[in-house]
Image (cartoon, rainbow, N blue to C red; front, side, top):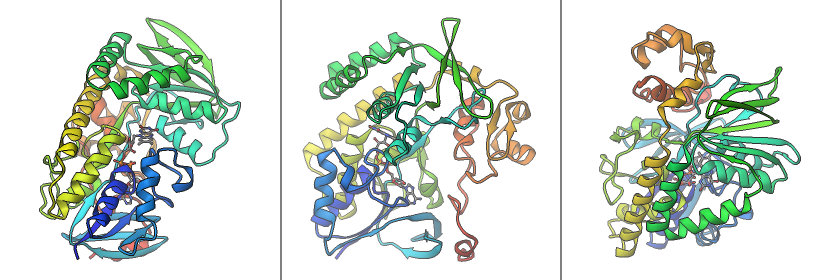
Length: 414
Ligand SMILES: Cc1cc2nc3c(=O)[nH]c(=O)nc-3n(C[C@H](O)[C@H](O)[C@H](O)COP(=O)(O)OP(=O)(O)OC[C@H]3O[C@@H](n4cnc5c(N)ncnc54)[C@H](O)[C@@H]3O)c2cc1C
């Protein structure tokens, strides 16, 4: 019987596990969260509204060939075909025959004045906190940055009883109209979803072509200043959710020696990576949303088992990639966002490195040696992509461990 290890139990990982188990394989699904679902289906089976998630989980849960490792962080690889995991403080060396990476994406956070104040969070971060049960009822929330995630976050905040003061989109309205037209012409279902989302948010002021100037507060966030067409306006708020897009999680793929292209895991049309026994699917191979993750998970699982994808899946796959390209083209962070990061602003919040000390550094390595940027607990996961955008530096290389781990587990590395 073939065995498949899958890292990540978001839509891509669940879809892959469901497909592989139904094709007769033995599946081990690994995730650092306490429940399956990843970002969009956070919270686990009891909280899912999307019927696809529940249907996939129904066929997996209690299946004799399915194992789930929860709260299990894959912190790297200790041999070409052996992962190192930390599970509740204990280390585990896990050999694999075939591996599927479904490690998702994280938010692109860009520095601006006051972004380290308590109350300033990522857009997806706020959504994750709300889904995790953080109360926001009657709290004032401003959502700013760029991309469709701002709207999803606004809806989550609204449904949780927050007072959403404004959504601030950096892209100009002409760009958003082009995106809308692209959806209408080529992705009718997503166009209708967007219309329905806007209809539910119609009371909330939606500013386009606007930018954060600073978050203000005395020790804690009290308001945010926004600029549009040269005019400034301040919104009082308890939370500022600021997100500028997503960045694929490629650290594990890099640690395993898989090729990376355009900052995502490089895969062919059957989701094969550059390593013969490793496949990848979902947001880690390029940002494109839940439908892309699901179809890629299916194609990758079949590929890993030596089975061909259906023509319908291949056609869906092409459609999802077209949508991903439309997203990337219309929501690429604009160079003018660099103006938010003035010299005194902290860029690396783990090590308190300010933009002024990064001026004159040539690349990430030199900056790291001279300023300690990226040497704190997040190991450059936040400031690395920010510096790539601000200064054009390549992303920092992955080092073991790819996420914080206990000394006991680290001692297992040869
Ligand atoms: C914070 C955030 C919120 C989002 N909210 C929405 C939303 O509301 N609506 C929407 O349409 N899209 C949202 N997205 C986009 C969303 O990521 C995708 O649409 C979809 O969830 C992608 O599925 P995936 O399976 O590729 O990845 P994910 O759903 O991100 O799943 C990846 C999983 O892998 C786990 N993982 C990664 N690395 C490791 C490791 N080394 N060890 C163990 N586990 C690991 C992660 O914890 C995660 O559970 C959000 C993205 C982010 C980053």
